[in-house]
Image (cartoon, rainbow, N blue to C red; front, top):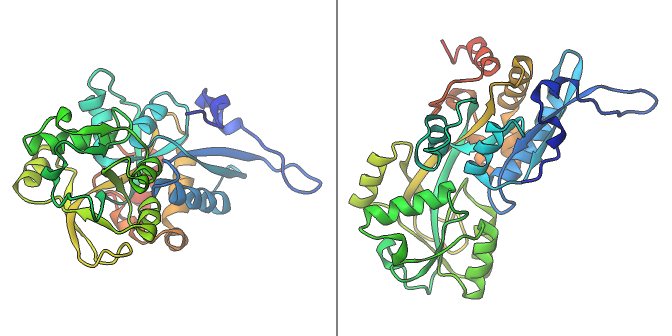
Length: 325
């Protein structure tokens, strides 16, 4: 992913990045990037609002922070961006963040131990989406059918493999597609794809788009197979997608969810980490205005599912609030 902040690869130079603004005078600004996901998910719109909140409320040493949300390839790619110091922060699913730090699963040959947590955001719901006329009523019905899992090596890709395994299936038992959320929805519309596995905050914009034009079904993910998956991946929790989350979805659906984490790296200056965390968690009502998941971002839940070290600047804020002892 090409970042606007590529010139800031030497993170030590971050605090010296300046932009000119204002009429008749120069105002110093510190750039701060947030890697999110594709435009069809939840990461991107929330990231955009978070960037606005930071830009409006955060400053360090008299310099305002100029934050920008960047589109990206979500959790796995975002973890690698942070590992290389190519972005200041990113949204990453809790299980992927844990695996990256420990060097497990997709990261078994390249652990990323410079990762640090800023705080937990909201639960991402696993949604297995099909058209209502697909003939798919349960996960096992996917045998022999096409299903999108996102980019190879991504969190979605790993999840599909885990779900197949606990259902006694292999990747070769389905016709795997590697489209993004938005691309997979377009293929389902056109009849070129049967199912898409989408993990995002609900309601998800790409799924709303699909449901508004086609009768859809969200396949339940529960039962003994899913319980086995939860033992393998303890970051997943069983949740219920409420009825009428999407047009035509009359009944609640049992499925899974995993927490989204806002992460950074260990070279981000402490004062910047403190400033952005303070701005975010003290303006959560603003985040809720852009997406319903914003209401789930609270200081009280900011440490849920955080298994890697907190950034010292973030830890300072949570101690001040009595959240961290």
